[in-house]
Amino acid sequence: MMVMRHDEAMTVTVRALQADDADVARRLGEEAFGVPVTPPGEPASIDQAGFHWYGSFAGGVLAARMIDREFDSYFGGAAVPTCGIAGVTVAAEFRSRGLLSALFTETLGAAKERGAAVSTLFPTAPAIYRRFGYELISSFDTVQVPTHVLASVPASGAVEVRRAHPADLDAIRTIYDVWAQEQNGPLSRRGISFDDSAADLLDRPDGVSVAVDPAGTVSGFARWSRGQGYGDEASLTVVDLLATSADGYRGLLRTLGSFSSVTARTRIDTSGNDLVRLFVPSAHWEIMHAAPYMLKVLDVCAALDRPCLPGLTADLTFMLAGDFLAGNNGGYVLELANGRTGCSRASTVEAQQPRTFTPAGLAQMYAGAQSSANLRVAGHLSGGDPNQDLVWDAVFGGRQTHIRNFF
Image (cartoon, rainbow, N blue to C red; front, side):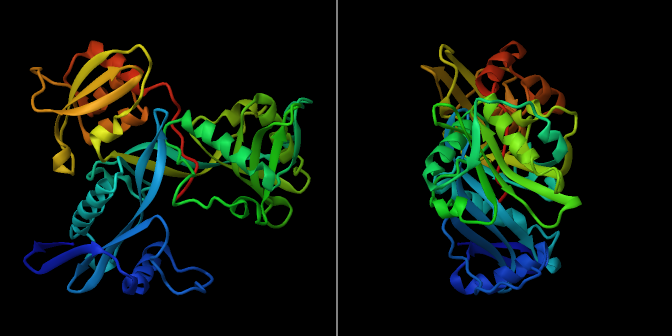
């Protein structure tokens, strides 16, 4: 628990929410994000696996709340413990009074103690979160393509597409795991925040189709929802589409295109420069909705302990300045050896003008979202030897930045 005096008129207490806070926490969330069309049938609860709720109380009233969700995210080929911030809400009467600062201090501090190395969130207004050290690294998008275009994807006789069954579950999960490990940003879909049962994937009105190669191996999958109605206003929604081969992508896209007589449009949840677009024969790829995704490096040394290019050997010094979590500021040494990076604190950084990242710059470098040259232009990287920039880019670049889960 943390108690602080915010101003002359208000004392704020920040603490983890308890079971008897659940009703007011739900009402506060509905005030910010909207009341459901169908009222919840279950009593309010904050007892959910992988959820850690925190609130700011002013005068005994819950004035703000947020949730730390436990995830792992892939960065640089490693599964990185992640604090996923969700449900950030401030009551109308308490906005613009600085309540989020105390709430982020408590929530991020607790997340760091439990081992989270980075924190991510989907902002409604990025400027709110930049002051806490978050910066944009990707976007979770929904794109729209005419369904008849997918029907015209060239056929491939190398794969068979069929409906998935429970025995395919491990193969489907492995396809996602292999894809996610080669990107920067995707959640691992393993652990406390995900249901490991086949029912979670297959026992729903949606369809799950798999591509099977001549050897009988599942080489791709698509999760889709037929939706309502038919004709010009109807849409097929695809929430997952991944394959391990070009033929797998072609087979799945042609199968989705077979709905062209009843659904004029297909909407695909995606991110970044999706491989799917390489197999769409037309230029149609209309972004219908974009949810920006932000990242903050929470524990610098833990986050920077990850694989790197074999053969790179160097000791790279840098500074972090201006972080909301003051304990993160200061000097570091990044050691490259034996295909890994290791990071430690440095009491001094030997350079007249040391390489210095802002929190936003470190977040974007870490995620491979921007190059050193671009960060210098944006004012998020200064000092250091510019000739060393390519080494930094080699360490943190080379992977696409993606996110495929909204939370």
